[in-house]
Each structure stands twice: as structure tokens, then as C-alpha cells.
Length: 111
Length: 114
Image 1 (cartoon, one colour):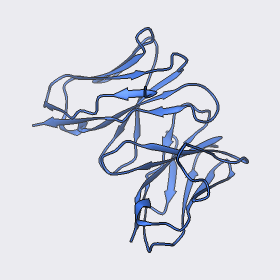
Image 2 (cartoon, one colour; image 1 turned 90 degrees about the vertical axis):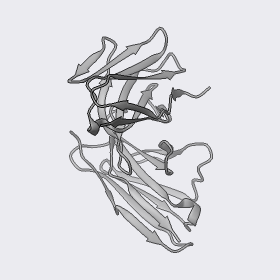
Image 3 (tube, chains in turn brown, red; image 1 turned 45 degrees about the horizontal axis):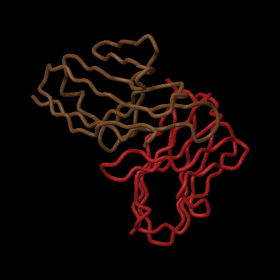
Image 4 (spheres, chains in turn red, yellow; image 1 turned 45 degrees about the vertical axis):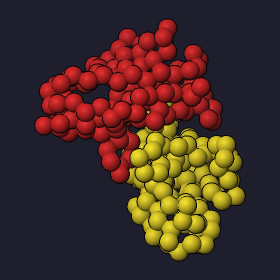
């Protein structure tokens, strides 16, 4: 089983829609969780960290469910500019080889 | 936020050439730097983890003699693709971390081997 799994999509949603992505992780010892956004042919950029209590940044809400071992990203009122690939990143602990990427979920927001 | 630069941003070279890519953390000291490769329409694949002053740790399937990594200081790591071949053509991205938490990515280097 992969360390981190995401539905690759694509998710095609109309402008203004609400869309949610999940990312599951296999190791219960995982400690830190992040969502990154990657635009086509660009490097990933940190979108938000994911905290146990959940966190919100404008139209974006991230949540962590340790019991079920998944993190989620909710985007409300989708904009055309939200079209990108969203990567979840899980860090298991200190030391090398502890950083795991999901394959990314591709989102296209349609006018 | 922290800034990571990469140089060069793109390289076109002949098969058999060695290519060196630099990754610099501009405004913080990076205890760890990571090197990734991304083929078109695929996810990032971790190649190796680089700690300052020590040998890099390579992921399974990544040839350490082909992809030489040097992390000489807390702000600079280099990746050298030795004797590059067309199948090495890819998007190479580095990231830097202060404490194995948030990763700050460089802008990437596009390598095309003819």
C-alpha cells in the first residue's frame, strides 16, 4: 500500500462550486500534514498546513482525521484561478526518507 | 516566506554531457534539502535527501553514481546529472527545510537531453 494516496481526478467543477479532496495516509505515526498547490510546469507552493483542530484560510479549509488517517481540503466558491494540481504531503517524523507526496489531484474550474 | 532558488532554470544538452543544478536557500539555513524529479503529468518523485556535511540518502532505484549530490553548506546543495541521456530529461525540483517541516520549493530546472 502506498504511503500516501490521492484520487488523481480530474475534478471538473463549475465556477462557484464547492469541491473537496481527500488524501489518505497509511502510517499512523505520521506527524505533519500539508497541502501544496502546483500549477502546470511550475514548482509546488505551500497552500496550507493541516492541524488537528482543522484550519481555514479564506475559501480553503483543511482538516485532519487521525482516526481514519486522512486529510481533506475543501474549496468553497471555486474560482478559475483555483485550477491546479493539489498535492498532499505527509511527514512521518525526523530523519531522512520521512517525507511522502500524494500523486496530486487535478482540479479544473470551468467558467 | 522562505525563498529557494535554483539555477539554471533550463538546460538543453547533448547526450553524454554532465549537468550541474544548484539549489540555494536565500534567507534561511536549510538543514535538509530534497531533490525531486517530475515527468510530464506525473507526481513529484523524491530522488534523494541531502543533509549538510553528510552523504545524501538516495531513494530506491535512484543511481547515486549518476545523480551526484553535494550539500556543502547550509544554503547550497548541488545535483549533478552525470553522462545525461534523453531518458534523464525531466523537471528537477529541489526543496529546502529548516527542520523537516514545511518544504520550500525551488522554481525547478527543466532538463532536455538531446
